[in-house]
Amino acid sequence: MPEIDAESPFHPEARGADAILRSCDNIRFYVVKAFLIYASPVFQDMFSVPKSPDDARDEEAHRLPIIDMAEESKFLRPLLLLCYPRQRPNLGDFDSIANTAIIAQKYCMDDIEEELVFLMKTTLDLVEDPLRVFDLSLRHDWEALGREAAKASLKHKAADLPMPSNEAYMSGMDVCRVFQYRYNCARAIRDWVRVNINNYKCLKYDGDRDCYMMEEAYCWWPLPGETLQSEGHSPRMEHACEFGTVWTPTSLLQKGEKPLNISGRRWWIRSFLSLLEQLDSRPCSETIVDWQRLIDSTVRTLDCDICASVARGDLQTFLKRLAASVDTVISEVRIAAQGSLIPGWLIESNLGAS
Image 1 (cartoon, helix red, strand yellow):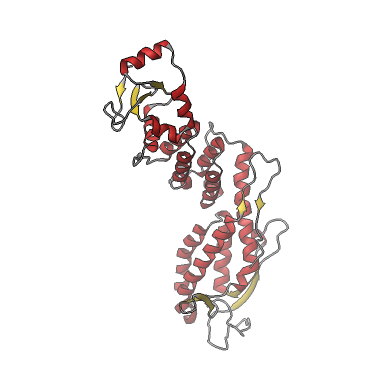
Image 2 (spheres, helix red, strand yellow; image 1 turned 135 degrees about the vertical axis):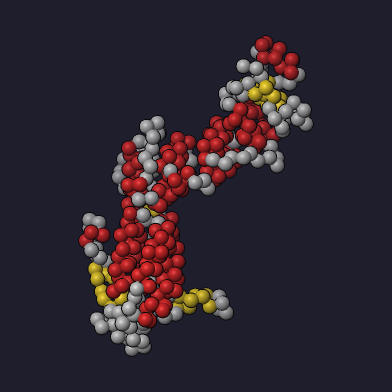
């Protein structure tokens, strides 16, 4: 295969070029050694290795030292650009970023590797194919990326998760780790709801005091001093919808889990139980956002004029706070160490704190 010179900034007229890197597909990159040595101690060693007689004759013909590389030019070029100041390659897709990060790891380019791993967290593949990303993180010991991939898997129902390919590095135990993490996130959310939901009062930001102040309760909960009455009469306002108290159905409980007592107006209880069921299958804040669209239709059909007039605003405030709380709970759930023989996950938080 004939040798071809790379395009700018690695062409033969490149300013300050004092070495040539030759890719496995015979593309010559004219590089500044100082930039590469600064980025990678491996390159420093490569440039100091004595040459064979054949290599020496090759270098004499080009008047520059030549290093033969194992990588193809399409992977080598973006890596070299990252070593240069004010140069950034166009790494638009996950595979390009991942391949470049793998090469950066090979050459001990820690800062560049860290930057590329961060970029992988922002790609669509993280959400669309989280187990594939998790598999890659296992191969290359990218712990932070693995945590993000496991978290991204929560946005899928378990049955909808794309499974790793036959060539995947993941073992059956690793797949179980992801599914156990999903279970523990759902369990942590239920534990938090059990402790907090009936005391989750409506807060309003006071700009003068720079703090949140207690406002009245949401329309589906009793006001201060109001008792739960089956007719739904309030000492402050007349509601046409009824109050009630229910225990969560056994279908929503795990073995050994205590039922959850939920009080409020009955339309709210029915809707919230539906949300809890959805959070079991997709334990993430995005589930709450999707659920809000569904409950809007319920609000429009309410017979109670009072609830119908304020429920939408109350729901927006409540669900925004609930989504933030779910994100906090999930952030405290830890994935088990790789290779752990003990099924289960570590939840390093006091989930019972209100």
